[in-house]
Length: 433
Ligand code: EPU
Image 1 (cartoon, rainbow, N blue to C red):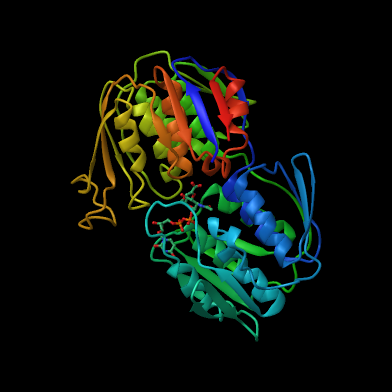
Image 2 (image 1 turned 30 degrees about the vertical axis):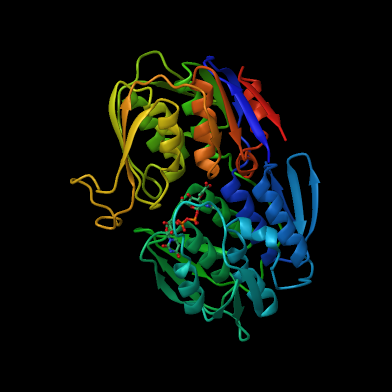
């Protein structure tokens, strides 16, 4: 198991360039399975989740070439429509291959999903949507088996909740289905729109209407494409929080203002500084920090993957802050770790009275109150999931003394060479194991 040793308490300064987004790159790879022509993906990140997805693609028959940050994938023939590799259970991607494999071979088998341990994470919205498009799906022990011998056909589908994965899954299946699909109450996350733009370039007809509706007209064939993975906005927020929490100043190269609107508003409310420049966004902290109240939401709201770096920052704010997590029922494990480092934070199950969410009355520990400012001290930690892992790293860099963080492979799944890049900002971080 890999481990980071971090000596904290230093101001981090300089510039860091964002890698391509994990949550787009992996989906673009799956989108490439919809054609037998080559798909070239630029700004491709070198992370664990893309490695796992490469293995998935190679298993079904893709040829993959890599040159620097460019990856070319071509799947001339599907060798197998069964994805049963143990490795692919580690993330949420295989279920997205159902649509492409059904189009190419009429049948598919994918493992029941893995991914971070942050709550139940059911996939009934994916399954119901694919069934509405004509797939027959059965759960078979550890896998889903799907068939669509006569091909998929368009349908009208309304999601109870704007799930990112279910929206992506349905779009990937609908672009080559016969006829029109209407998708209501869809997710609109920038990573998903990155996939939509790739599909459009490949020949798909996808319209975005009002009220989170997508209108998709099935086409007969998609072709090869050259497409850029959008810069990772979760990395952007992590590095921004790091700059502010360590009292430093960091230019986050390639950070895109459009994709960070709610985060930037939060930075301003806290009294920290940002400046949008042609190369990206510079984050710094000229003042003491004010507390804030944040509620996570689907895009364009405050993203759930941003609450953990913010949680660390809020331990340094002057007063009581609140984070209300409305996307996942169990995403505050890291708060316990922050308390061990000297933070004063408590977790509650009741929604704030003025903003009940879908977890209201369900007894989920989904509200955190953080009392700041509290100095942090080094501790021994083990990464629980990807985003809580980055909270550990930021907290260790803020803390006085030395911290040890175990299980950093989990961080490598989504943050490219994080230790090397942080060292260039002045961080004292070393890896072993
Ligand atoms: N949900 C259901 N039923 C479904 C699908 C989802 O109840 O059929 C629930 C989930 O249980 C969860 C919520 O809806 O409580 C959100 O799930 P969603 O489907 O929107 O998320 P996802 O597609 O599984 C992606 C990212 C997550 C990110 C979320 C929300 C990938 C691979 N993962 O997950 O990223 O938090 O969208 O934006 O794209 C991460 O990168 O660390 C990460 C967890």
